[in-house]
Every structure is written in C-alpha cells, then in structure tokens.
Image 1 (cartoon, rainbow, N blue to C red):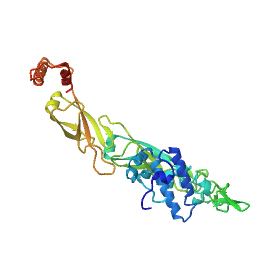
Image 2: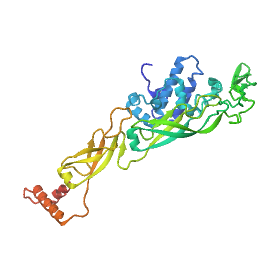
Image 3: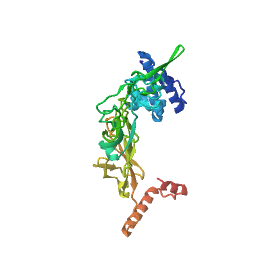
Image 4: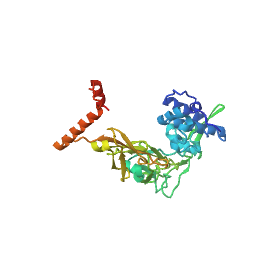
Length: 380
C-alpha cells in the first residue's frame, strides 16, 4: 500500500465511534483476516496488519486525539508504542490480551483449535510499576526490578515429566492436538480434551513442579531508562512475562513509569518551571542572579530592569533532554518580589522619599489627578 488509508475507514467505524465500537470492529477484521484462516494470502495478512496499526492509534485516547487533529503526521512512528508491526508476531505480542491471551491464543484458538502453535500457548503478560525522581529523568538511569513470575522448571526443563522420562504422544489425538467430529458432510475440529491441545501426554509428573512445568521464582530484570522519559510511559519488554504452556513462547513484561514531584521544578513536557524570589531593588534596577538547574549546576539568570511580579524569564536549554535525543527543553523562572515584613526607620524614610519622588514624576504636569487616574497609576 503506497498511501495509508484513514484509520476510521480501515476499521469501518465513524469518527464518533466509542472505544467499545473500535475494539469490536478490530476483533472482527482481525478474525476475518487472521493468517491461519488465510494461509498464503498476502493481501489478507496486509489487511490484518493494517487493522492492527489503526487499532493501536484509535484505541489510545491521546494518540486518537492527535490523529483527529493532524492525521497520520500526528502519530507517525507511534502505533504500538512506536515499535510498529513488522510481522504477525508483533501484533500478537501487542494485543494478545485483547483476545484472551497472547500469541494468538484465547479468542483465536476458539476458531483455530490451537493449531497455530501445536497446542503451545503463549504466556501471560506481567506488569511492573517503577517510580523515578525528576533528577533521574534528566540524566537517565538504570534500575533492577524483581519480578515474581513462574519460571521454567529446571528439573524437567519445562516438560512437566519426571526427570529421566519424557512426554509421550497423546493416545486420544495421536499427537495432533485436535480431534475431528463428522456430522454429515461437515467436519468439526476441536482441541483434544485429554492433552488440551498439546499432542503429548505425561504419565509420570515431575516432583519439583508437580507436572506444571513451571516454578514460582523472583527474577531480577535490568532496565536501562533513557533521559527524558515521561510520566505514564509504558514499555513492553518481550519475553520477560510468564512462560508459555508446554514450551510455548513467554509473555511480555509491561513496565509503567511514574515520576515523583520535585520540590523545586515543575515539569511541562520537556520544559521545566520554577519560582525565584528577588528584592524590590533588583526588580526595579535589574540584576543578575544564580539559579540552580536540574543537573545541579548554577547558571546566571539576567533580570531586566522593571521586571514585574509573576513575569516569566526563560533560560534556554536548561529543561529536560528530549526523549528522541535531539536537544533539551527550556527552564522558565517565575519572578516573585520579596516584600520584607519589617523595615528600619532609615529604610522607611528612603521608601517615603522614593514614593514622593515617584509621585512627582507621574504628576509633573501640575494638574490635580482624578480618582480614575489614581486607580490607573496603582496598577501600572
């Protein structure tokens, strides 16, 4: 396909479609064009991938909003978390849970009897949440998290059979994993009830895993977290979820990132915001002060003469690194005037003289000011 079709058109729904409508439409198209149902049909596989790409965008509220505003340009490279779909396995990895299990199991198995993997089923996905400081976001970091998951039994190598023995061909389905019933001219296939589609049968179970093929373990996972990662970012790590049944592929580990609030900086995308308090003289005459940055360094902030309370001054390239690796955001400093609660008699005298001189400057034409002019001067 040279040009991408409209995602709503791909799924056959209107722009006002609800999330449930979008999910239902995708399931129907995915079932109709599933590669196991259309072996060797390149066009069906292309439609299968196209529908998955459309669903990856329209099922995500933020991506859908960008797509509605900017079209394909607003979500290029963002379907399925930016990974894209290069093959059918990518789609199963991303949306396996939508069909009641990964790797094409669950929903698809109702129609294909698990034939796609010979009864081997993909493991379930696991979720882990990690919390980062804004300083770690600024520099990038490495973390090791412990994941509680079933892991392949070392004693039987995941077969479930007693060490020294091996699973045998299922006597009911003769190793096919399916049995066929004939009703007139129609033949129906279903998963073998004895081996549950595995095609093999274990007579003597492994004593370590009781025939399950897996044992619960605490597994350390090393993560490399890039600088600039955002709150709520979801990263899918393939193959680090639960192991598949009967030697099937493992599920994925879904890592969700959370960022703790910072005591000084507030984040807005790649930009940072902070508040700095200055003296009245600095605001009137201007000055240069040092302020801390997210990297821990001090940088000079130039305060122009006549700076007003609440005014925001920009310090270029002192925000967070952009996740794509190109440049940084900016730091915006909101200026607040520090008003002393107590002053000396000398300070009071100087302020009154300043106020008197300022009043003369504003009313130097000698005319008596009306109430509206006085109110205006108060807010200038």
